[in-house]
Length: 513
Image (cartoon, rainbow, N blue to C red; front, side):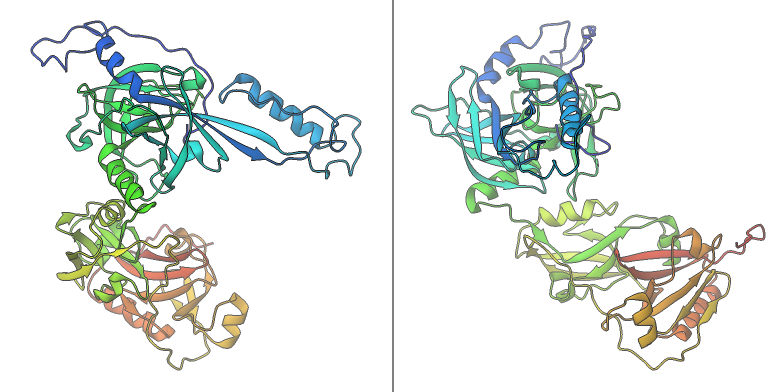
């Protein structure tokens, strides 16, 4: 399965089957739970449409003693308990091992084949197969194995790393058994589901469970909206289908959470409604085409909401705008909080990328933003997300002459200064950088608590561009006079732009250090 610090790779683990009491007063589909009528008929119908996928790629490594000498790392099935043991053993050998001399580790080893195993399913009798992108990523050769052990070499029609979906094509002399996509939006928490796939290379394995949650964000990408299931999912299940009791694919099994390394009943599947759109675009265009607004956004925190007079922390805060993108043409501005897009509520920041991505390219859509303490209605024409978007952030107001002296911002714990030639050189700031540079930050103060540091640049204060220390002081004073509890600053550093709320409340127990 896919891995990151929160989703570790898995080792083989035992599964405990817990019988469930019969349910009274529900439909036949809802009553198909372990301990009652079972899933044999449904599984028999679906298994021929699920495939095993193996991919091979060429790996170039180094070994001790040059070509032809020393053991090579055996290729074990993913998840084998021997895999890590032999990896550690060979790592020691490449570092010289016991008695190994220096200078012996630089000789390249002949290329060897690495194998990856996963799952997939047929969605068209003509031979269209769906799997995860990470199952076939970097593969030189892809093989699809049907339930009857018929093997095919597959052609990659297209893939989408953002959604982790790949579309394959196999050529058969007869129509293949296929399985249909269902409507994942109709799936409810508690619905019974089946997962079928190729865990640990075993092939044709069926596990049952329920939909445990919807709309999960597991920090795998900007479009996270996973279904969570407790159906057993392990390494090798990646790319396999998650079925509802009507035999429809409502998810693509992609990742698991497992502190122990074994299946603990927390698996994640890409919703079929997201997958259907991506698959259709790959089949039509060879790639996924997504809507694009051209904004850099961040979460609206309670402090930020209070500083701009918003009653709750919903929406997505615009931190920057692509210079030639749809947002710029729609006259969105940095500091706007997008509350609705295309008549859909943006309840939190992570909702916006998915809503925009699923919007028709070229469509005029209404956008509701919070600006200057009131709702503003705009219209944006949705663009197409570039393959490699390099966001060009909107520039602030033109430079103004500024005095050379640094200015201390009372109660905030920082000093600021103008962007002189000396400051640009000292903090390695570009000539096109606008704003006011932070020259000193005191620990244990609002600025220190928020992680600000010398060399950061304040671009805006309370959604107004600043170019001199006096501008910053003036904006902070106006916020204090309005009895706000915090002031909102747009700050730029090497990581990009972000909105930072700084508390204006006086804390007598605070002791700067």
